[in-house]
Image (cartoon, rainbow over all chains, first blue to last red; front, side):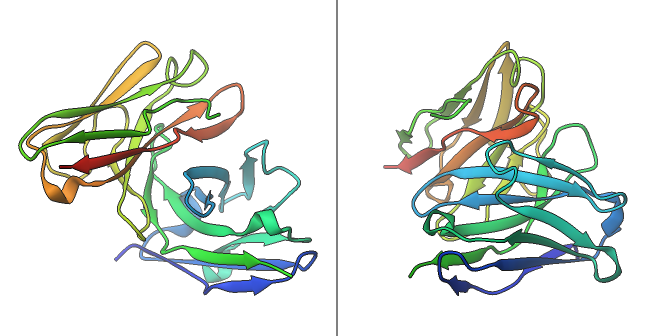
Length: 120
Length: 110
């Protein structure tokens, strides 16, 4: 079964760092782009960026460029989303999702989401 | 303000046909494939239409997608109570070099 399993909920203070994970299984991990989507409380979906595990090619949404870092570890088929200095406005639900192997940019498999709360 | 625009809400009664629109520009919908996602409360989104009008396996054929120029639509016929959800269109934008989501449309089955 193709699955993306994300790490658990996190609570941090402003200025702290954080790295959340997305463990993939059931498919050829290096050959599918994997991306991150933010959903702030009560709001819509925002595409943050995407990475191709095979060569670590990354495309960031300009709105998130420099604010987060997307990476992968192919040895454990895991993708990561990282912050160096969290802000209260980073409080949100974060999803990882696999991109289909076509030209549509459709995301066909989603993780269950990781809630990040940033509060002093 | 999202780059692609959806109505905030639509509603219909069981058995009716409803459509959700998604309006964009030449740098996104006019050039690239549109995908539609359904998000039920407190669950991850699920792709319901990809490549403008393709249905993944398991999605009922009551759901259909279309695109014309810089607009796209999701149509749901034979509306059922379980269709009540938030629906998002999404498309690659050549100017931003990023995927843009519409703001989402809340479908209410009356």
